[in-house]
Length: 111
Image 1 (cartoon, rainbow, N blue to C red):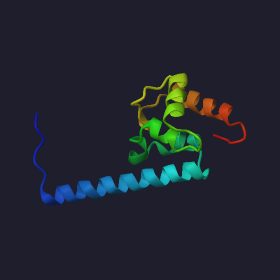
Image 2: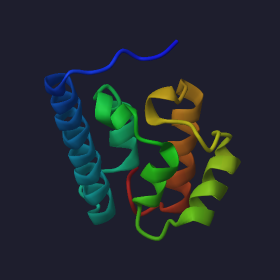
Image 3: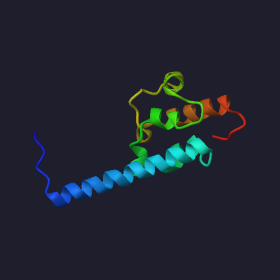
Image 4: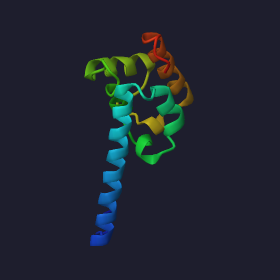
């Protein structure tokens, strides 16, 4: 099944929507890196936002200070989250396990 060709106005709307979603995700990751917001707040309260819900969990983890590719992959493996999982696709138990894992790693920071 092929997609129907978009009109120029539909293409423009899609481009603007994608740009707005990228801006929301970039601002969220910046706030995570600076410590203004915690992973727990993002996972429990923000996943209803479509742009945040489409963010990959690995990218969310890499936005934390001191977490790179390998550490994010290790955290996800320990908690039992697939590498391709997005925030909106996390189950209740995965959310809880991820928050608990990060809280135990950084007891000084409330997740």
